[in-house]
Amino acid sequence: MTREIIEHGSQQRSRSFAKTRYTAADLVQTEWERVFRTTWLLAGLEQDLRTPGDFFVFAIGSEEILVTRATDGGLRAFYNVCQHRGLRLVPDERGHTRHFRCPYHAWTYDSDGTLRAVPHRDAFSAELDTSTRGLRRVAVDTWDGMVFVHLGNDPEPLSQFLGPLVTQLAPYRFAEMNLVADQTCRLNCNWKAVIDNFGELYHVDFLHPQHRSMVDCENDTVHLFANGHTGVHVPGATVSPRFPLPKKPTPILAAQLAEVGLAPETFIDRVPEIRGAIAARKRALGQADGNRYAAFTDDQLTDAWQYNLFPNIVLSFGVDYIWIMRARPHAEDPGRTDFDKLTLARQPMATRPVRDEFDYAAVIRGDKSMTITIDQDVSLLKDVQRGMQSAGFDTVWLSEEEARVQHFHAEWERRMGS
Ligand code: FES
Ligand SMILES: [Fe+2]
Image 1 (cartoon, rainbow, N blue to C red):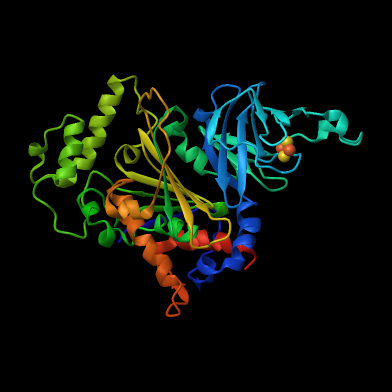
Image 2 (cartoon, rainbow, N blue to C red):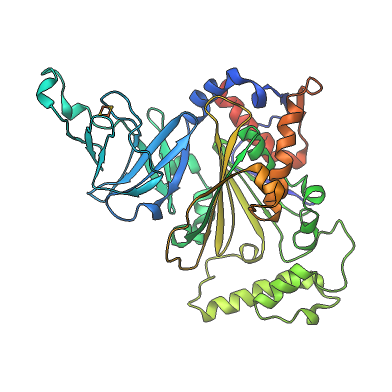
């Protein structure tokens, strides 16, 4: 095995721990305070906030955050709560408006959160100072087209929280990609089980047998960053060395060759050469197309890349697409998670896709799909939670192949103070 683990600074690992962090209802509130209110959270996409008056609402745990493009062109984020009697202010997921008008007594706020109008103002005592009754702000910042909010006090700068992965991912220019699919799957497992699932390749040979014909999980490169973030890349356009070498390109490799104009039949008995040939071919095609791949390494042109942002984001990407996956915890139930998948591609989109929300059972029935691989993960996650709740299980044990999972949990423990 030639796994390379690159540790950016000294790191802690957590190799075994009690199952209760996935199952205990009394930990949910502590986790909210110590993990979700101490980190930057990916709230949505800047492309949903192109013009002043555009807004979206980001729901996570028991909170909703209203994110707007204000008239001065800047972004603002607020708790989605009217400051009169606490009604949830905006019921829509996203839209465009000049003002936010509370449906209860019509207190009206600007897109910068200022309280503009209070009906029957004279009926309030003189102490009501409307200049201090604007929407309650939270910190907001962006990274490459993604909008982040921070619900705690004195957040560190977003770029500092993200650290060196910002530089590593700079060539991708995700902000230039367009949203082509917006899905949410309601899962009956803890949000950390979702992140664990996307933190290791140990399960790939067993749960995703199709991957052996397109990636090499034996020779992966793992990054462990400060603040619990991790990354991995796996050689693509190749086959798994754990299985006999095929004589001719597998169907998926044949399709990848054809996509860049290379004849699959010329690679009979040359399967190990495919990865290099596709990289060279893409580079040549890119040169003819405005040198579009000049900033990328060969690894980036062919391989499967995935970075997890602590606490709850998984980014899976190639040079022309990204899947932004997010696990949103339920307000009280540790066994429920909303799992979002935003698919962006470097292609024009006339209209924004509508968000499709469904239960995991719809995926298992085959009525909905988030790609074959993720469907396989989703159909398994329901049984992770079921097993963990059993009296017959108490401790999670992690291998070196699960180094990213270890790293995530060490950071979770650091923030939880446990
Ligand atoms: S609760 Fe919003 S105006 Fe009364
Ligand atoms: Fe998987």
